Length: 178
Image (tube, rainbow, N blue to C red; front, top):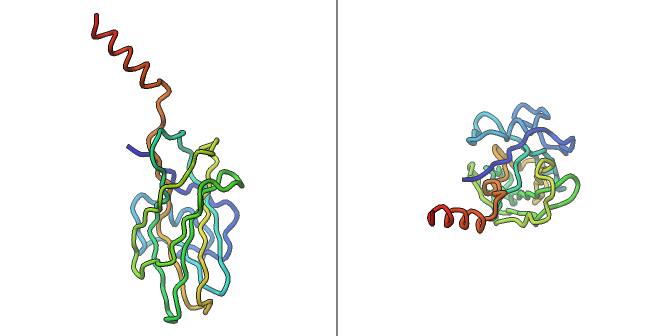
């Protein structure tokens, strides 16, 4: 089993990102359990500089052992043919980066689900204070190329057990001995 931390609020850092209605309710456009690019998404236009937005993630319990991933569904529109913008995701706890940034300079031209490499979250202390920073990485800077994200979330293993496995095993052994 896994835990999923979906966007739960905008953090106040929208950059030039907009939702599908050219509004600023970014988290609500990417918080769904199933990607729905035809209905909701956020987007940024490549105007010659990187563009960042940040969304708060819902609280989750400290995970047990295993890999943690950022998962997202996105597409790029290379309307100039001069090179499409890329996309970068990074996990934050408050204002502190946690784990390496996950960049993708080969975003597909149709909505594609992506799972990043596993990220190191060993320094996370407060699983209720996580944020996801999404950055459009500029390329041609023509003002005609766009990147769209329709879903983004953090996936972790289920919450860790508070009882060590050795204690559980010993209890089971004692019960079996009678």
